[in-house]
Image (cartoon, rainbow, N blue to C red):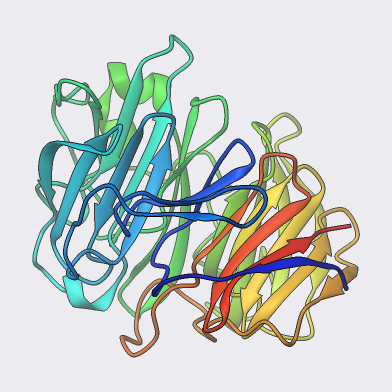
Length: 326
């Protein structure tokens, strides 16, 4: 268990992202903590309604986690307002992701018109690049993430039972045929049907870590993932290269390379290859929330894993904990 330092904060931290060796809370107006722990004041105020954010390069989207409103900013300045469908918006987290396509175009993925229709737009201009006929499934998209190379888009949402579902879509194909964002996608057909998927994250451009919850949809026999099981899917091999059982709920996941961080109750670092617990920090409390839908009394954890995969920042009641992942 390694704690590098505890950074004191002047108020509640509602978002975290790494900018080099510094940490930034864009929801907090761009508050910044230098490598030595010095806090630099906010440059702007976004009010109290916006409570979470995703960041990418010079851009960020600040949003109401269980609401319909968001804003897109560049270098801390407003570009435009965003919205999502009001239908059951209070029941699941705002679906939004930022990324860069292989041709260098910075884009946003979100659901601006309908809860079950993913759209991809140019960040700078807002021009929609997924215009065409659509045939969406009845899925509430959430936990959107572009793969590091921008070729694939992950959605971990839910559908009525309710049951958690995971899909990965081919972004390059969707630019040509937008309905490619409406089908089963690139994961095995049974994924999200045999198992109740609660979270997932990219380890690299090829591998995806997927966590199942307590329930199995349709019975354990033949399930893609069993209860509280962690699976590592490789697109290059078109196979689950690792599957591990967990002795406790995994919650939200952060990943880099062969390291995974599980955020449920407190942070835990796991080996993606073996599922082995590398280290945990029980004294650093984070919400117990296990999925991005359902309960509304617990917000999502505020944490950021450095691109080096070693430095983990977790916001808590006492400030920002800087932790070292072995």
